[in-house]
Image (tube, rainbow over the protein chains, first blue to last red):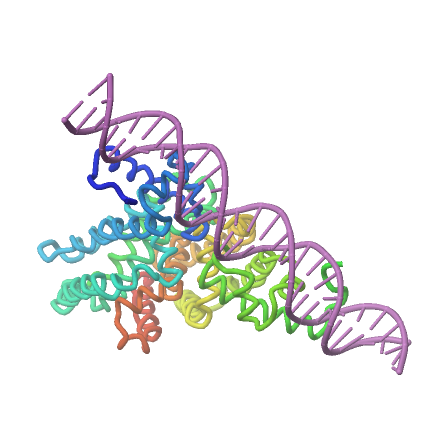
Length: 205
Length: 205
DNA sequence: TGTTTTTCTGTCCAAATGGTCAAAAATTGT
DNA sequence: ACAATTTTTGACCATTTGGACAGAAAAACA
């Protein structure tokens, strides 16, 4: 038998450690570039041990991707009717920006996966994710029609929020290189201020 | 001697073919994921032949990256003083969007490189590119100060243009999955309309 | 035409790497 | 304490892959 029968405390902990190490490795080098040995090193254990817990490198990758996806779309899920529309969208944008700041490796992992054709996410993208986006787009469209925000294509609005917030995580090397070291510290404050002003202007009816 | 002495017509053509094949391969799978064999297949020649012309896979990659970089930043170079400021920025944005549409593989190659730390571009990013961006940012800042466009951080404005335009190329799989097949055809027209309206609202003084 | 140079490929090699396996070490259960 | 189970690893294997090499094929040159 390859996998253990019952999930013990040790197993959960070890899996956690491995996933954390793998996240780092995958974000740095992608699925192909990350090696089992590197993951094992980062996790502080032997290569066969990593295989013992997940069966294969691919399994780790897929596991990570699946579990992170839920976290990743949560802010959009929380975009709701009851708040002031403009404020709600700004809150959504800010949460996405904060996720870029706090979880750059996760962002990079998703980016790499999608960039290379999302072979392990296609289903979810055109299934769950599409449904979710369509639902929220409808909400935004309603706000738009009621004159509470500007008339604007809701799908592309969502894309623009994704693009601009994740840009700071995915292309951090470029952003920091272009801005220079001295602006590195306050980068996310700058981004927040810029994006807030930007979206307020774009969305105000 | 590894490399030929004089550059003949055949050499130019073969190198072109190889670079085109490699671009496709690198965009699909990244530097690590793309194999010499795959590149050779796409180029319709043998593996050693590819090596004969470039010496190594790395050399092809670096060569591509360098030669494409100039093309890639040209639109920003062309952002100039003499035009109407808002129109000039919109033109820049549109050219970037068109590049995403026409050169998605190039966009993906750059994205992948930067995402993974830009080991072969660091110099250029904090050197040439930073200079160029700083220069154009100063121009935009002047427009801003003169009240010709809204008061806005020019560096982040440039980032936002990069992010939003390249998003359509880099994450095309996601965009198309979320929009659905029926909106696939007119996608770039939609994007153009959306972004134009968006930036006009954001930049109008 | 004969010679030289360039182009091209089949074959092979060494390194990297994902994964297996048997057995040791540690833990758990009785 | 002893047996059973789980955890952990060193050693090993098969495959992939970047690239070297020698020589064939073609082209250029004389």
